[in-house]
Structures are given as C-alpha cells and as structure tokens.
Length: 70
Image (cartoon, rainbow, N blue to C red; front, side, top):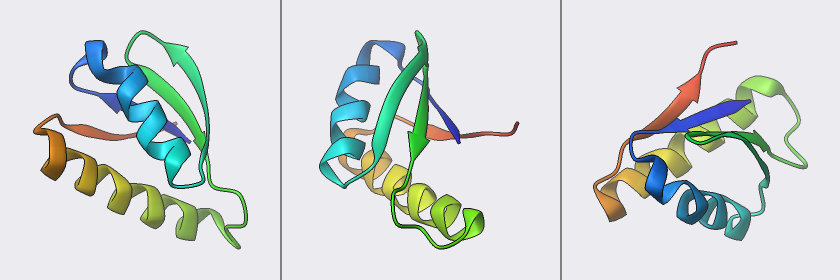
C-alpha cells in the first residue's frame, strides 16, 4: 500500500519508523512510500495496522501521514 507524508523532508524518518515496526518500505517518490506488512493475514488487517502506526507517528511528530487510495 502507498503512504504519503505531509512533510516530504521527513519521509526518511517515517520510513525508518515503519521499518522499526517490522514493515518493509520502499520509496515511491519525494513524499510517498510503498509499505508492506509481512505476516499480515489479510489486506484489511495490514491497512488497519499501518493506519495505527501512522496515527502514532503523527502524535509523536506532529507530521501527518496517510494511506493513498490506489
């Protein structure tokens, strides 16, 4: 799934945060990451997990981030 941050300067920091939580992350463009949750049994479960991680990220950093609809 794709994730976009509201502050492209912090994209690398977001990638490291998600990797630290066990996600596989690759850069799509200056503000977007492709995120995979290994071991997720279903896509909707992976989406819920990433949504939670992004809420934690926003609370900790004050920087918004969200999933991008395909």
